[in-house]
Length: 383
Ligand code: C2E
Ligand code: CA
Ligand code: CA
Image (tube, rainbow, N blue to C red):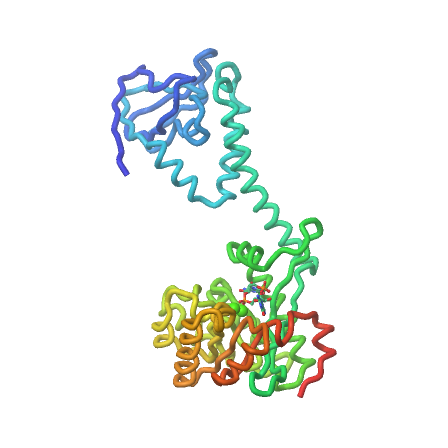
C-alpha cells in the first residue's frame, strides 16, 4: 500500500468540482474547505485526521464539490484501488449502505455541475451495489420473521443401524418454506443465519423440537443436531439446552452434536468446544468427515465420539476404486480409535452391503429414509 504526500499553500485549490476523481485524501496537517464553486457555498471545513474526496472514488464519478487549502496543508493520498478493493471485499450490506448514503448525500448537494457528467455510472454502480445488499438485508429480515412466525420447520431424517437395518436415531434438519420464493435450502439460509445472531434462534428452535420429540420416542433412539461455532462460543447456549434436557428428564447422550470439519480451524478452540459438550454429556460427531482441511491431524487432536463420513465417499465407492480404498482405511482408523462410524448419503442396497462388510455402525440416506415431519416420525414402529 503506497501513500503519496502532497503539500498546498493557503488558498490553493486541491480539486475543482467536475474534475476526474482518482484518489481521496487524509489531512495530515492544516485545514481544508469543501465548497460549491458556482454558488461559493461552504459544505464543510475539515481538520487534521479527516478524510475527504472519497465520494467520487466510491462511485467513480467526477468531483461533485471543490476543495481548497485554508491554511498550509499536508495531505496523504488514498488511491482509488485501496478503496475499491476494500469495498469489493466488504459485506454486501455494507456496500448497500454506502450506495444509499452516497445517493442521498448527492441529492442534498446544491445542484448545477454536481450531478452532471457520469451520473449514469453512479446510478448503475449504486443500483447494483444496492440490489445485492438490499436483497440480502431483506432475506435476513424475512428469516427473522419466519423464525418467530414458525415458518422454519424441523424435519428428521432416519439414521439406521447398518447391521440390523433398524432406525436408531435421526438427524434434525431445518427447512424454510418462503411465502414467495418457495423452498429455500438450509445451505443458503443457515449460512445467512450464521453471519448474525439468528443462528442462535434457529438453534434454539431445533433443540426445543428435538427434545420434545425425544420425549415421545423410545429411550434408545437419539437425535443428531447440527451446531455452528457461534452457538458453541455462546456460553449460555449449552446451559440452556442442558436445562431443557433436564426439565424433560432426557438423558443427554440422546442428543449428539454435529460439528463440521470446516468449523475446526483452531484445535485449541475446538478442544474447548468438545470438552464443554462432553462435560455436559452430549456426544460429539465430526460431520462431513473427509472433506475438510484438517484431516488426519484432527483425529489425533480431537477425540470425537462419532465420525460421520461425507456422502462423496459413499456416492463414489463403486465409481472410483480410490474412494473405496479410502473408505476402507477410514473404517479401519475409526474402529482402531474406538469411534462410531456413520455413512451419509446411502442411496442403494449395494452401498448398504459394502458398508455392512466394512463394519460401519450407522447409515443415513434416501435408502433408509428421507427427512420427514414430526407426525411421520411418530407413526414409525421402533424395534
Ligand atoms: P448435512 O449436515 O451434511 O446434512 C445432510 C444433508 O444431506 C441434508 O441436506 C440431507 O437432506 C441430505 N441427504 C440426506 N440423505 C441423502 C442422500 O441419500 N442423498 C443425497 N444426495 N442427499 C442426502 P439439507 O437438509 O439440504 O441440509 C444441508 C446442510 O444444511 C446440512 O448438511 C447442514 O450442514 C445444514 N443444516 C441443515 N439444518 C441445519 C440446522 O438446523 N442447523 C445448522 N447449523 N445447519 C443445518
Ligand atoms: Ca449434519
Ligand atoms: Ca454431513
